[in-house]
Length: 170
Image 1 (cartoon, rainbow, N blue to C red):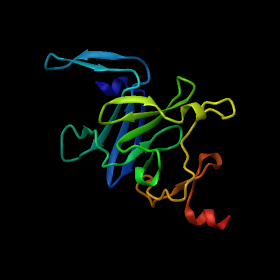
Image 2: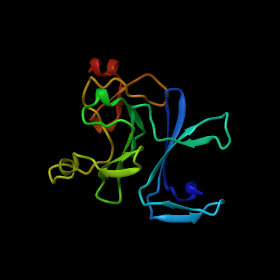
Image 3: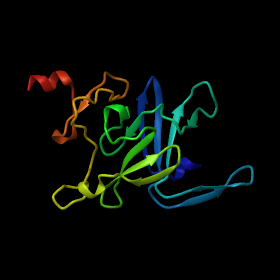
């Protein structure tokens, strides 16, 4: 039922597993569950689902990303370890709130809450363009996982991906 009300969805591979990130971008919803309870889904609530082909239903909601964090936006999802990215918190989904000046947000999978990213004031200052995608400038960020392919770095140039070898060629 939640899938009907989650209008923003992202798929990514990480650590040999398939994941989905669902976000309810419209409004708060609630409905009765088969056992007579009530399920409430707040606006901008996020679900992280992990695929398990051995189980039915095959998608499990998870609150632990193994200490990693995932960034979702208009570009494709990126997974990285917080130890390689100062200011990044483990087990969080970093997302962009398109309905509110493209504010960068952080969803904590453990608490189930979203908060403004600490750099929001800087990202939304008049001298900066609105955030449209995530990018990483530090060459020490090597744990970026990209759809199961080799780790890559993200460049600020047009928010496109650039491998280390092609960066050295320039």
